[in-house]
Length: 132
Image 1 (spheres, one colour):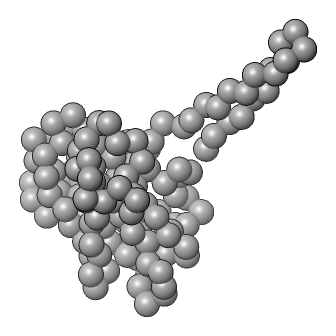
Image 2 (cartoon, rainbow, N blue to C red):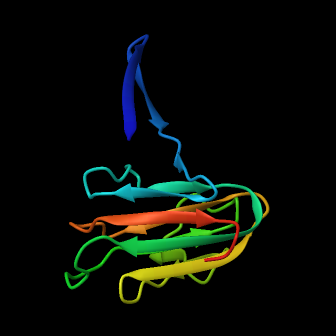
């Protein structure tokens, strides 16, 4: 959620935008989301760890199109991982096949998970340091 504020200062105005911090994912747990509960922007903070598996599971029929897409980065310079920066700056797509997708990697400085095309699909995000 972004909050826009306008301040009047001596006849001029200044616009401030306060961005909401990404929701923090927790190691060895999962979160469930419906389209209404996905944060805006749909970005999640991944915790620091030498090796984590990020799992995505669709919680409803995945025959609708387009399905949500999930993008992960462990590059702290990338603030919005998505389809526009896949293949550069350590941004990877977590491919979901038959309702399940997993990506394993190092998050020495943490990372971000971004979601595109949420539509009407409920999904779960799991984070594990013990494998898939």
